[in-house]
Image 1 (cartoon, helix red, strand yellow):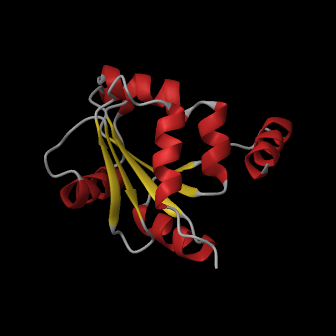
Image 2 (cartoon, one colour; image 1 turned 45 degrees about the vertical axis):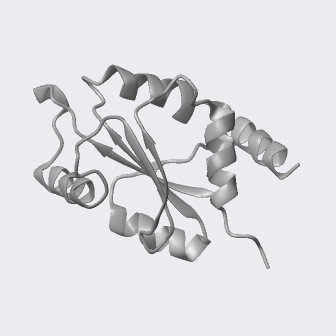
Length: 147
């Protein structure tokens, strides 16, 4: 029922969860709002599976509704085309985040963390078996139980 209400809110207001670019701010927001953090490592202009995962899953209304009240979303993008290059500051933040959570440089690579940075779940690539339902179910299983 709660998901239905959030879905209606998203549809009526046009509000969608925003992807944070600063992991430090994401951790603070997750701590304050008691949410988990979902970090997506992407090559937005060269990685076919990254582009497909973003379009099929992360931009879907179902995922956006689900994540709105449960997740702080972080995108660590590594574009290659000169027209898409990030600022030196953002590139450094993304590289530091990759050093900690994606040291093998996999793309796409998605990590579910708690507010302290503890890893709960990892998704390597975009396997055919990954659906919005399976991903949200896996995330839901890691959510803290309200006391």
